[in-house]
Length: 203
Image (cartoon, rainbow, N blue to C red; front, side, top):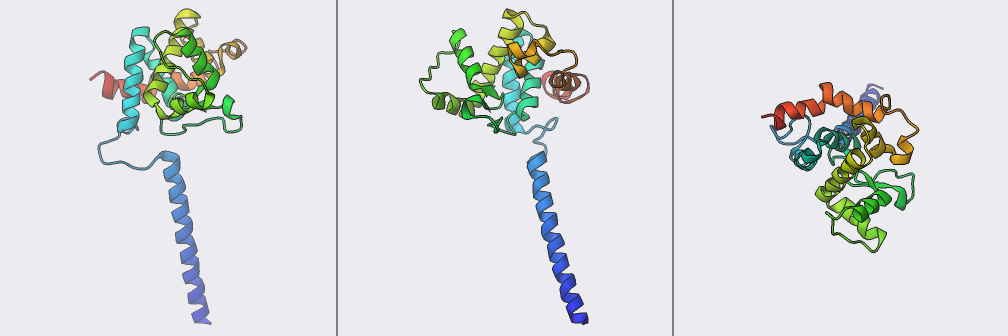
């Protein structure tokens, strides 16, 4: 009888060990795999910081650096998650890359901006570029933010809301209370954006 109890206890220990292993792996997927000591700054690894710095430099002439950084963090944590969003939608309506740009939005940016000489005959070519060229993806994001802010004459908060919901969709929501905008504003005051300016940009 004691032998059977011991065997049952051993099996139970094995199950618990396996369960803890699964839980630990899931937590790693949620928070990201650890990197070498000293590599993370404000919670970002080297690749993520590189994209953030790229967004910061591109958006600086438009006075939109903090907005661009905020969008990049909110959308995919600077490329950590993704790169394909809106899986419930069809391929043409999903968002792609670190800045989560939709196909129609990307085509609009390319058509109205002479800065981009890229031409894509087929949707799959553009989708591939949005996913596989993260720095180009971020450049499109900055160009779109600048168009919303300077050409459409939106406020800073309205620009963020329009990026998230589209220009028409943003008109029926309050930019002062919308969660997407509030999350970025919170990062400015006491969060990742303020940390980045303390640890990276203001050094």
